[in-house]
Length: 258
Image 1 (cartoon, rainbow, N blue to C red):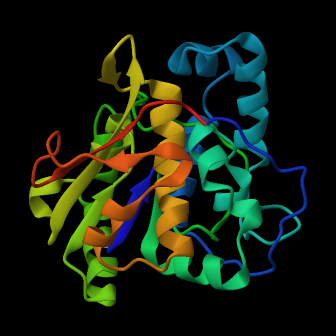
Image 2: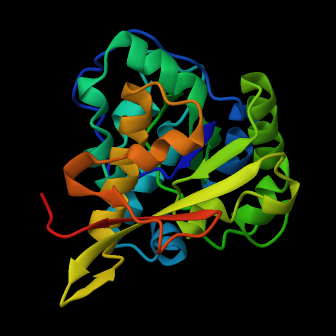
């Protein structure tokens, strides 16, 4: 199986990388095209486009102008270790062994507005460009238009390489929309994580994001290659609930946050 997760806004390029293994993003030519267009924007333009503060607009203005290939370990960091949002809190890649990283490299992909589709150990430079940003470009009015079928084609290529017919969607809706589901050559399974609150099981954003990372780590550390085995996921108190689930949407519930 192949798993998809989202990137994170929070980045860590200060902490030294925990592995020397690295790879290069597959879509750097497309990334450069986006960077070239983003460099035409002022800090104020960037703040308006991304709906962020003036301080963050200035930061990302500098990031876009400092962005330059070739990527190496002196000017870039592996994506899985650079992202630091809720998903990555659950993933805890800092605890991975070399074998864990190698398994993740085959079975996990990170969707990205700037980089398209990343392998966990692909080197990246600092950026902010969410997939849902309405940034006009040669492909259309937004990044979904820009990426078109490229990311779906890349997913299908990796599924074929794995000889797998299962795609596990652990990405947010914003990012998963970049994949053209009807064209995916696999069964698509979407895990849903619910926590007990006021007597009902509900999706609580923070916990659900972290749980996507927890499940990714569970699959990596247990070397899971068949999606059915994910029903054994039990990290931090979650358990599979058959009654709440459907064939392609698997619900995992938890009574108390750990």
